[in-house]
Length: 423
Ligand code: ADP
Ligand code: MG
Image (tube, rainbow, N blue to C red):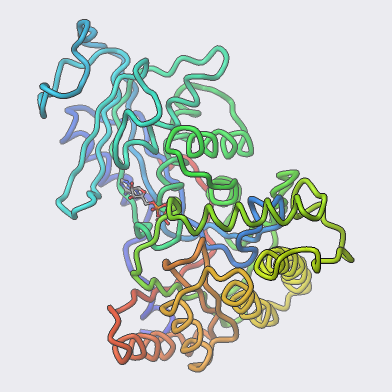
């Protein structure tokens, strides 16, 4: 087994996964699904905390995805009678399905207890009415149902995902995107990918209540295999940039620190507020509008560092794209590491575990490494020579053990295909 295979987890055959999911769907719901759709998680190569500042990002879709088997209700049972909605007093009773009832199931449960289920009626959807993970698909349904001329019928859905939850690889967006591509196809809505990205962002902002940007959904929807997505979060113009990592003898390792984080955490909101304050103090609508020579001296010291990160990060994204276009994959390593330093010192969203992952990966031979995602935990990425991937994994794992930390999960990811129908 080559070192590169050693850190790659087996079992990513989409067709076989989809077949197995269809089988489980039939077992659960008593009939075959209409189809199976997949939506990948993402790694943000560079461009962190720039998305909500209308800046530049460069994520790629990874070869791990959420898969959803879905069947629209076409033989509606009797519509639930008045007052029969799911709620207190109805316990776990499964009522006869009405035409507007959505049944959700996932092979993942928050407590690791196997299948978890949720049920709601579409007309009764309001923010806060669907607890837990069901809010992600429910938010998508709610937003689509609110579009002019669209009425989403009830459906059954079974979800299975290989995107690790809470690792900063956007497992939540994978769930939303799998739902939106499935409904777009089944209902013939004809939405294009930028539209679907905007709608899932609205689902997340308005229904789930998380003030997240547009990058994660865009990566899942618009990235392609072997490429990164150079996305301007202001215009939403996107361009695919070749990312031939393996061809250059390199591997991207994800180091999941297993430190819990949540975008709902105050830190994320505080950074957004800081950026808005900074832009306003500089007389600009967003940090994207601040001219290059602007005097940051009018800002307090902390806000100035926040602004400096966002602006320098935008420049690093541009430089990364330039180097990738020139075929210099190895050359982006120093930019990744510079991004981490800026996120650690200027934006202050790293944490000891992420710093340890980055520092030890670099010491073990990575050509570049950085935290990725919102920060305060989650994952780091390291660009490593393929032949050193095992060594880097071992050194990082040993360093975590020596520091008395929980063992990180270290695995390779490749730039994979964007969301779509599998069968
Ligand atoms: P991440 O960085 O992985 O997106 P989040 O905290 O934003 O972390 O999202 C994780 C949440 O997404 C989970 O708590 C759950 O609600 C939902 N989720 C992710 N994967 C699944 C899945 N396979 N089945 C059900 N819900 C999921
Ligand atoms: Mg998320």
